[in-house]
Picture 1: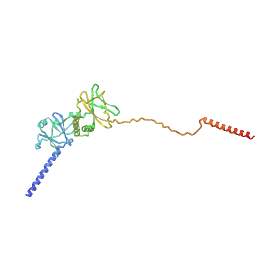
Picture 2: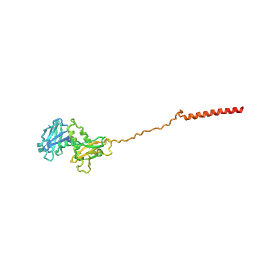
Picture 3: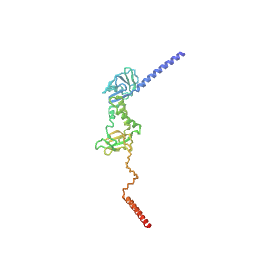
Picture 4: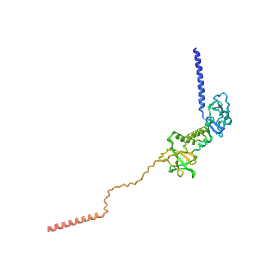
Length: 312
């Protein structure tokens, strides 16, 4: 009886370990980044993180049952990235039902194991192209030396603007960070990173962009924008712009306005009193001294003459 219980416990433990392993594999597969891009209504490209530079196989199903899948060999896009895809035939076969699941595998590993896929959430190539060009539709010129920000606009078109301090919300901080990250994308940046960045930027931009009909827009006079009053050094600003045709764009500015203390230079003259040696440059004193001496001599002579007469 004891041996039977032990066997049951061992079998139960093995089954549990197998189930946990299966669940872990599926969980790990579900975390694989997959970006779906809509080329047109009947053409979708699927990029799988880690498989951009190697061949793989993919399959679709309308159930989570993986026992009878028809795998398709991956293709390549115009830039040589390996992709799964949905064409018109595959769309009609698998994407008219309520749920669709995708599997992706290489020769020795299952990468995506029955993950749900929804073409309605795919980003269109046109949407991503538009978001890549934000800050380029209505441009401005600004420098620390200029008192105004100049809009590079068209004569006869009215322009309006709004300022927001970037640090005023987490969303604006993220918008600023994301635009900075995207500006550093180059030929070495993989397509998954780019698509994820553009996709997040589009969603964030759309959630923050002010309404065209909002009454709080400020009209730019002579296509010039007044800088924010009291801007601090290195403070970052989000500048929303719109024109009278309903176009909206955004610019990202950093304040370089420093506090300047004007110091008036005053020359100070120090008055110094110096005791000068007597040089007798003034002749009046000399004349007086001579007169005193002469008078003294005369007095002495007169005194001697008087003394002689008395003796005689």
